[in-house]
Amino acid sequence: MIPVRHAMGALLMEQGPYARAEQLHREDQVKHPGNGWSLLGPRQSLEKQGCTAEAEAIGKQLDEAWKRVEVRPTSSCMCAPGEAG
Image 1 (spheres, helix red, strand yellow):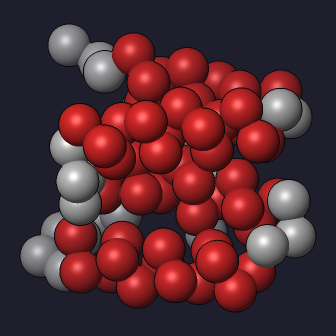
Image 2 (cartoon, rainbow, N blue to C red; image 1 turned 60 degrees about the vertical axis):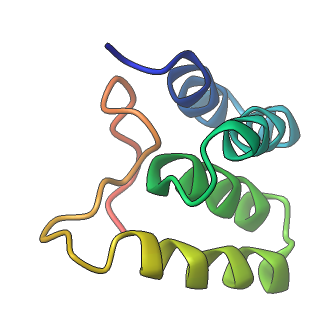
C-alpha cells in the first residue's frame, strides 16, 4: 500500500502547489513522527518556496531518519520519482 498523504504530496510537488504538499506531509508527521518519507516532502516543498533555513532543519531530521539506508528516495512516493538529488 502507498500512504495517501505521501502519494498526494509527491504528485502536488510535480504540479507546483508546494504549500499544499507541505501541509499534507506535515499532517502525516503528526500521525507518524520521524517518518523519512513525510520528512522528505516538506523539506522539498520548503526549498521550492524559498524557505531554506527551515528546509535545512528538516534535512537534519531526515538525515537521522535515513541514516541506515543505502539509497535515498528522491520523492515522498515512488509513484512520482522526483528529481535525483
